[in-house]
Length: 279
Image 1 (tube, rainbow, N blue to C red):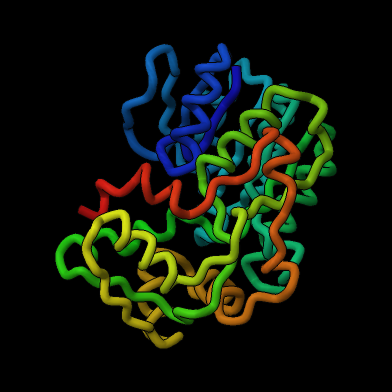
Image 2 (tube, rainbow, N blue to C red):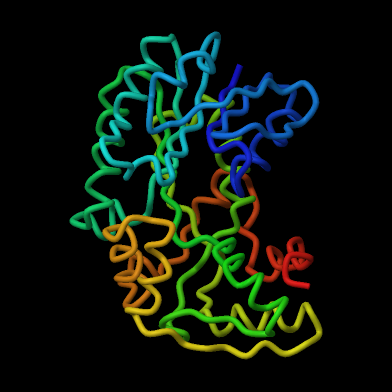
């Protein structure tokens, strides 16, 4: 049995499907009730309360751990999930970490994630760390404004990073969950090209066949929007990167291809699969 947390999200959903297609038994974990593929067990759990994951871990051999905002919830103890998994007999954990743990180690959110990484390394379980950069799926934030007003807004419109397709992260995670050859690996996951927010809007416009007006936000405007969904320290850490990515954050990593045997998908592929959200 393989347990997938965040199973209804942009990474967890394709990961669950990939594992099912590979013949694995899967337990899908999400905070709320959800539809999952046939044959998949679904368990609701709130990772901000690690004990709620106990039932999902019964009989599990591997765990995909995606903490998301739970890492930053007041009083959260995400390292307790590592201890719980070890106590329940889980043999391997694939942790979705962050590129910033290596490139911006002093950021508040990166320090918290590093603590989870360190707990996993010391747990006695097999482990793999996945450190993606920016996600192509962040463009979903524009879906409503593109549909209703033909606009997209973002800060630092002409500063790019090599955003990664969540489906590529899912494929890498699936390989790491089932193949012990990846144990102890740290993979940095990026897309194949540096692309700016303005260029992303242009790719979406081309796929739609209609223009999109791009509006560049100030940093303060962007942060005001971000803190509606994430803690202020995470918003600041993210804005620091997208304002002035350093050479390591601009590097095209070979790790997606190293694990799954093909180059990472460009942003246009993500758009083609998700264009209905923008119509």
